Length: 423
Image (cartoon, rainbow, N blue to C red; front, top):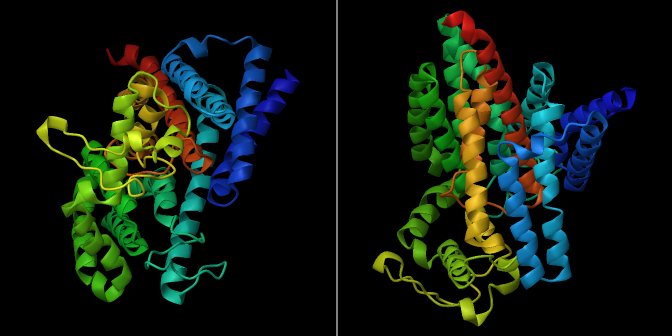
């Protein structure tokens, strides 16, 4: 139908612009995500396709959603209830990408180009700020020395982490796979350059997760192993030279990081995680609803220690363990919807990752492999993170997951077609 086709083109066009609005214009990003979710429901009604919501990961997502809303009704304010209800737009957006918007390879390639342009812009802005002192908007580096790239605050590291693998690494993988030594050398140099860029940005968790992503890439793509190893050596040299190249970045990446790890239980992050764990212990089944951590973290009932596995962890004070979110996706889910909601979320993530693992074919589909790497590092459980259900984070996470699932579905389909001819 003409109306359905027009809706599909509109959803695709909006998806292509989403990476740029994720970088600057989160309100518009939220509108894009919501409109695509609504258009997908309209598409399903027009073509009478309702079987997708009963398959794969979506039932687990819906069960988590129901538990989050129920917990918010029991524990939260009207604002908490309304926020928990609209969480569903992210799951619908992800399903729309998988089943509708990104079904064909051409649309996924164009999205890769858009994400690649966004990644190049972030890298260029970081180096502009490092070499010239200010970015394109006139902002200097942050007070702690971190490069902000095209942003006012230090967000360049996490933004680049979201887009660097699907946006830039497919081209690097192709060059490393090429027979000529010049192409291989240029690919290895590109990885080393990106490692140095991440180090100079000066944000600890994005740098660590980028390193993890390179390790995963080397594990699943054998011809990238020596280049990744060489880039790791270059990164080590860069860290040694960091007191000269960027003393503030050295103080943050090395000195403060080692001090924080040495006394992690007593650090701000350690105290936040402890507070979240205490809240889950008090409300194991349904948690405290959307924004439950923010609303109740200062309650004296939760300002006490725990002794997991006989290891005594003490709460220092109410303020040190309090924040607007727990800084970890899985603790955030547990405080929102309890252990039941956490179980649903973990099952959903496992289904996402398993689908992408089954479809891995780096030689034929390097972009799908890089989306798998991206989803692994974004959903890595042992990491500090921004709040999951805010557009700044959820927009990237569900974009990458939906894109990765669509690409994996395509690779799986090709394998099923080819299998009879290979037997």
